[in-house]
Length: 462
Ligand code: FAD
Image (cartoon, rainbow, N blue to C red; front, side):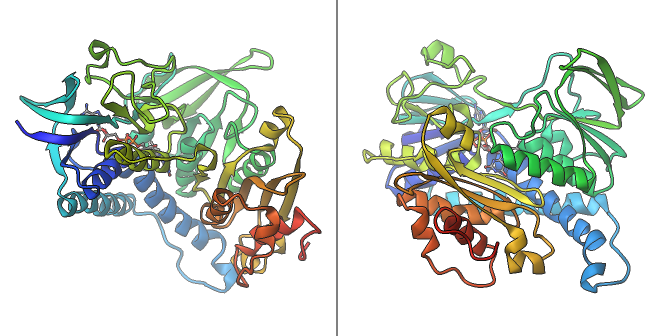
């Protein structure tokens, strides 16, 4: 039995980052992970593999749709699915092994196996019980399904199954027009599948800026994705390897069916806390099944903290990482901080979609006076040269003070551009501060500056 300052349960972005920072702060640290590899959902079956497939399929899309226009002619590539899966696995392996290396470098012990907390200050892994002055739960989340929809991970799959299908399906129905559904839907559409997205609400990507939602759906439709909106899925049935999806349209309650080779259920994720023994410990949970935590990420039991997808907040890897670093500071007796007002969200389709801070709707609901600065990528020289001029940057700023309150971008490299705004927001910058900052030409970033200019006297190139 070993004695640790801190044991973290879960080796995903929340847990492994927390473990590395704890060790860097001089604490004797262990991280418990039950999977064969470190990195959690994100590195094994989430962010990283999905981005590998998005990247590869985007290359194919560019070759098929834009190469000839740019004067690049010749034999167009065809899909070797096995090789694409191998590329995805190589990407995963490179990343998960990287975390193992970082654990060794920082002297974090990886306790292999599934952990539980028999009592405060103790973590059980297999037959061994370890002492820990403090415990951090970072056990993440798992896909959730719908009543009437039985997942077999072959024909009816979650994102996990969708990342390793035996072949590219001819037809795919995606249930849920959220980030994961649209990213993976895009992958298979680019690889040749006929993709139909069935969504309960009337707009895709719930919670996003309404203008972005409309532009995004228009672009995805143009790319070939089909949408059935306002549709409540009733059930899925699988016969002879084919699926039937039954849904009811909310507007008139009429019932319809769709047939598909594969159905991807992308209706969200739920916290994963099974087997930890939280009930017996008396740890308070929220109504949504998340672990309830205070402002210092401590649960209702002293000395036990929780972070990442297992606690309230956006289910994003970087939110988990930030909490991981902040909790390490807390555990080391310092002060940890996460600014929940400045957590970017990105959808890695083409074009990318990114947002941070307030939406117009949120500001209206709060009765806050604001102004909008918007700039279309059509006026951006670099975007035109890259055949990627669809989309816009929209900055929301306080009407009186000009302080930036939020931003919404759809367009090339949106997932990178958003960080300029995040930094500006962290510094409490005004739109004018951004507008007065020299931006290199020609860059996509100039569109951000132009949107900032649009909050004042107006942009130059529109
Ligand atoms: P996880 O990453 O879920 O890690 C938890 C780990 O704990 C797991 O490895 C699990 O095996 C382990 N564990 C659980 N219980 C125990 C136990 N009792 N003992 C030992 N180990 C245990 N987010 C983004 O920010 N960007 C993206 O592009 C993105 N893309 C995604 C794509 C897909 C397809 C999916 C499914 C998710 C995506 N996410 C993305 C979300 C992101 O993966 C999660 O928000 C993130 O992984 C949460 O990190 P975490 O550390 O809280 O939990």
